[in-house]
Image (spheres, rainbow, N blue to C red):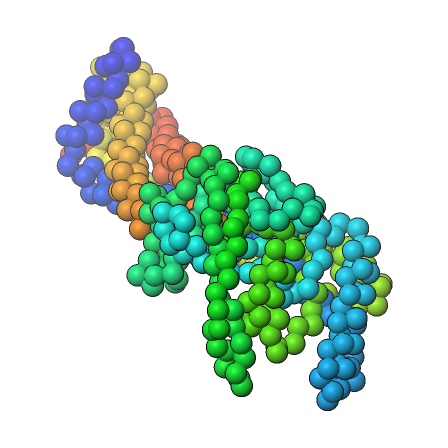
Amino acid sequence: MSIKDYFNIALTNMFRNKKNRFYIVVMVLCSLVAVTIVFLGYNLLNILNNDMKNQIDLRTFNIDPKTTPEILGNPNKEERNSVISKLREAAIKELLTIDHVQLVTKSEYSEFYADTSDFKLEGNVTFLYATEKSLPQIVAGRSFKDGESGVAICPVNFFPNPTNPDDLGVLGIPTVNKKDLIYGKELLGKKFTATYDEYKLEGSMPEIVGTHSKKIEIIGLYSNAGSMSSNDACYVPGEDIVEMCHNANFVCASDQEHIDITVVVDKIENVDYFATSAVALGFSPYPEPIVKYDSTLVKTIEIALVILISLVLGTVSIITLSYIKKKVLNESKTIGILRSCGYTKKTIKKIYLLENIFTNSLSYLIALIIFFTAYIILKNQYIIGLTYRGIYIKMNIYVIIYSFSIIVLFSVLIAYMRFNKKLKSDIVLLVGSGE
């Protein structure tokens, strides 16, 4: 028999047998569950094991500059603030001596929010305090040097945070339209005006007393993929943030007292080294990053995913075993007749295995089409919005390979073992077992 003959017989059997239809429907459901679990598992583990480890908050600390209850409890506000200011300056100098420290600044200067209407979408821009040493990897353009002013390093897919509530979707995630994203070289060299209000404290309530603006030029781009950094976050020279904070008055230089020092370490692997070194210099309590990486949680999620995949495998096994057992029983006479007509065990096995492969592959293909349709709909509605938060959900070839292995290859393996066992039976018994 030629290969074409094998395919023709297998396809004919698959569509002729009405009982295959119910099996296909059940396997489509199993395939959908398998693809969804593998897809979500892949992306979740990628976020936890890779993206989250690159999140800057995991290596950012807020350090107390060696204050004491006596200092903080001093009723003389002017004297208290003066002492705290001196402690902070001394703390900054000490913390900068620790290896692997990228950035040290007063906590109120770590970031600043301003408005801009110079892009496709009007919205807010988050300015992050940076020095030449603490900048992310530049993918286009150049970095800035210490002492420069009025420059910024922005995400390669820049998207200001919408100020219109109608542009905010589920959980405050912006409804991102691709046409609003500003890509790559369109950003380089672009100048925009950042505007922000000046506040004055009247009692306990702030009052807007003026507006300031600052011209910013985008000189470089960085990728926020794999770092969970939002698409509106631009790095600017620290001196510019200090200037804007003081101009705003209420935001950073108000009556509110600021004590902490913000420290950024170069890598998550050096977090413990920094904390130990800070304690050795007399800082207490033991420093903890703003967000702590929970390896136990990651392990728990990994175990849960393994259990879910095992349940899918178990379900597929039961369904396939039941289907093949019934099919072998119903086809026993046909198998016996084929053998008595001179067909070899190998030839018969190929015919039935190809039928099983086609049936499971068709089920998987239908499930894949349904999944991709849902994925495209969700991508346009929500998944693109998640990229604004630096969370990239994507389809990967491994998702297809793993789920295909669960549904098709695993099922074929079970079918192979069942048919192999049945073909060892005596021809007389096979012919006599049919209805």
